[in-house]
Image 1 (tube, rainbow, N blue to C red):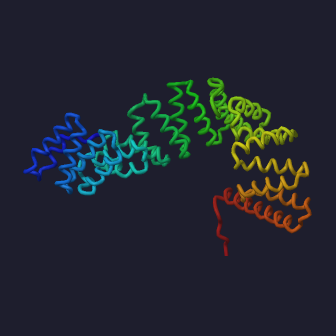
Image 2 (image 1 turned 90 degrees about the horizontal axis):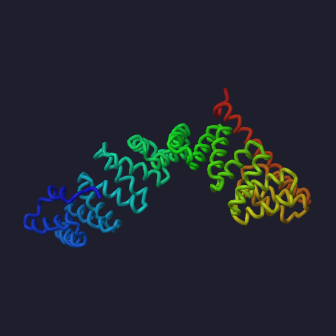
Image 3 (image 1 turned 120 degrees about the horizontal axis):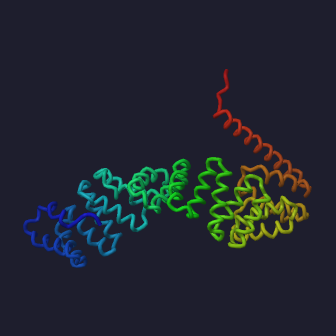
Length: 374
């Protein structure tokens, strides 16, 4: 921890009768006899419950013993009594951080940063606390400052790059990953995450090249073939996508997404038998893959298995009610089953969803909604 017992010597003055007890507590703390120091500080805390420095010192020795939760409680008592006592907010933030309570660490660390804005440790801890609590956009400026001060720290630059990527700050992410690759050109994770940043800026051909390089460096790396297959898939290049999903499943048979996408390709290429096997396998692994239910619905419809088709399509519609494709297939299925009323409902729902999608596209193209001119 950061606060030293020597600092406390100058901050606890109103205890003339107990000066010897106070000095003994400091000596025990300075000599590393934490358990005995804890007893001494607790005795002083009982005598002077409103002395902020004593609670801060008790928190310090508890933290030295690894008792971070009670240490944090003592730091909070100290701050409640004297919010300006040096370093206590920092110690509280650090105690919360070490417990993995990243969100709880942020408020005291912000207070510590305000007290000492030039202390690089506070900024780094703030950046990591925001990162740990998934507030990636807020993490970026603190991590940028820390990374600038430590250019050789690849782990720190990786955390910064991830924060940029996951907060959709793609230029920042690409700059960091390229910097990492300059130092370590064989960093598979950097190639993979750079590919995500490139894809986020609609630069799919460059993203594919990064993933191809990652697959060359480490062909057994989990998800590298899946991600490469996925980029080919969204580009409708199924001939290149399918082999990548196959390789991923060879390395990781439990990759549900790879099985689902490969099953979809098999259905598109008129192999419903293998498609059904892959899609059912995917759903055994992960039961919320909408595409798999939608594709199985089509397969079962073609096989005249109306009950199975109905269950699959209802599940697909439930997983994303805003997509019209499941409702259209339900309408066709209800027609085949002779339920004209439900068929009309699903056709109407399909038409309504298509209309909403068209309205949304117009708004995107026009830059927003327009107020009609009277």
